Length: 250
Ligand code: CA
Image 1: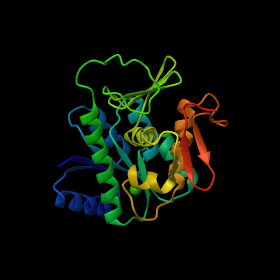
Image 2: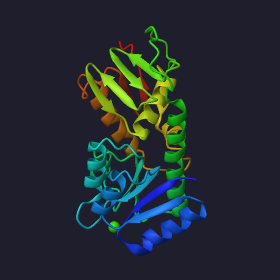
Image 3: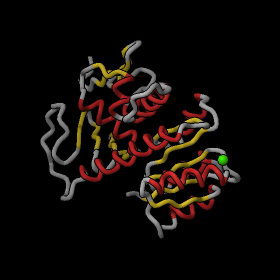
Image 4: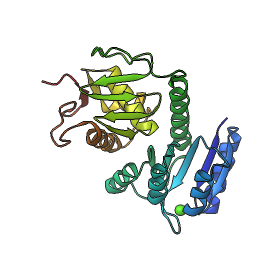
């Protein structure tokens, strides 16, 4: 059972979602606009496990809400509902901090599956979070994620427990989805990872989905870890198939 916030100004849609989520024994709150959503999310009175965030809202739109949340260091998983699946909208959604997106109109079972995926990952990340202080693992370059949930390569380190990526003296906060994708790449280090396997292992989806969302995530991860994102050294494209994470680059 989780606490879900639905941010949607169309009452019939919000009520339909609430009904179905409550039927799955989630606790649901609804906000009808961006300001109301930010009030609930940043007001600290209530803690949510996930947010279903519509893009088209009166006043502050979904992009602005997601961006303000992340700015305020709130990393609650966000599933964004886009009106169209225009690639630039999807990119804008991810750039503003959404973890996943679904174009409207959507099939309810798909929304439930996406949301369940976000909640599962959140549980997993919480279990992996280190309970004690960080152990000082001696930095060998094996593919394993250390007991403290940290993976280091080429002067960068990914802390899966804290959802942080440290590059030089900068700390970048990762969304659940970014961390999930990085974890999948690290576990398959040096191997070709197909878009299909990313869909299944990271998104928990087995149906046909727009794979551009994955490419957009890779663009974002490259901005974090690559010296020159246009000429990646670590996160390489394998034409026609997917990607290869090769931290000991040629
Ligand atoms: Ca709307």
